[in-house]
Length: 233
Image (cartoon, rainbow, N blue to C red; front, side):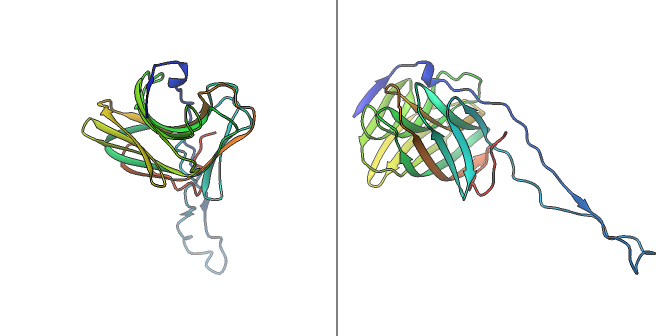
């Protein structure tokens, strides 16, 4: 099934600004029987978790723990409840989000992975998604444009983007079901991220998504096993 998507407010997402904080503690050896000797060189602790993700929340939350990223919204009145974004992605790349659980609070709830030009208000983007409207299933799209919608009752999916030159392909795979969209994206750098929201009216019950990994081969952005808190405050 293919669906035409017109540009709209929900097609645009912003990123919160953040900065990386790395704390290094220096520990020097104390004197003793060797007090007359030069102390050992200070040994720094391992650096803290690199902060990779900008978070924008409008009624939802993002948290990392237990080896996974969890996006949650107790309800979603409209639009996007929470998003996480990395910036600076350049060149050829393959990026895959491993989504292990999608619990929708009602019709309209969705999780979509997004790649777009790294600008404040992108008006076009590629998406790979799992959702509940207009069908319960997975989708891939170049927006605005057409979407490939494939029905499935699966709650786990792989959301993947591959760019070679200026050709970009978005793929959403759940079990044996795959949705695919291919188009042109010459912008550099790009941003990549996840959005939890609704496209089918208000969702009154909680919606929760669990993502266990982002694998990424490319430059300017980073893979993430979500084994430490890489969200910017």
